[in-house]
Amino acid sequence: MSAWDEWREETFGTPYLVWHDGIDPGRFGSLPPEARQRVLALLPAGIGAGDWLAAVGLRMLGAVDLVPLLEETLAQAGGRLAVEAARAVIALGGDRERATAAVLRARFDPAWSERMAVVIGMRHIGGDEMVAALLEQVAEDSDYLVRYHAAESLLHLGSVEPTSISEHREIFDELSADSDGDGAAEARERHRKAAAALAALVR
Image 1 (tube, rainbow, N blue to C red):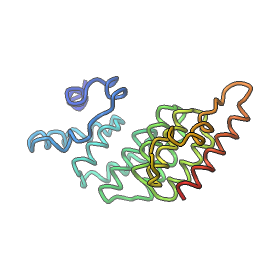
Image 2 (image 1 turned 90 degrees about the vertical axis):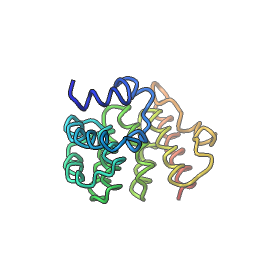
Image 3 (image 1 turned 45 degrees about the vertical axis):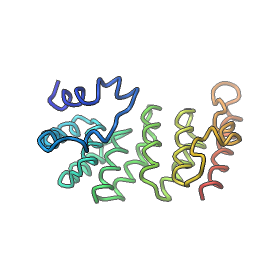
Image 4 (image 1 turned 90 degrees about the horizontal axis):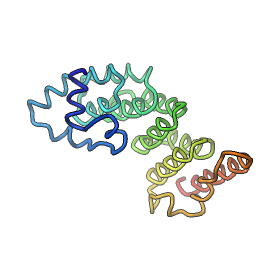
């Protein structure tokens, strides 16, 4: 286990716990000065290993000098790493266009869990291109959880209350239509209706 992996597990728990329970990003900001310097030295190794949590650390610690590393990472990154690296690049004053392009590519990741992470992260980036992409995700993605979280990201970006999509019952019923089996074509049409309704809410 690398020094980065050891620190990660000591601080946030096992990879399963991080995946299941999430993290408190504020733990990076609460590090005392000596520990902060140690973690800053470890973060490039985390990025090199493709760890999205390292990108969160760079953002939270304000590691402006490592923006070039993050921008290089965007070229190959997919899934959650792409969206967290993009958030860090934007927050630290890097190339927003390159960052948003990486996120827009990452939303097509073959793994539903990675697409879900991307659409959740998109609410923290914003802009017309994110809104358009999230509407497309609601309309076209085959996975219910991806559509669900894309819809909630749209509510956040549009400052629509309540921000829980299940509270917007008519839209929720359309986007949650099961796209498997004989009713797949009808379900896809219902997903598109949900996207159209969301577009009217957030634009």
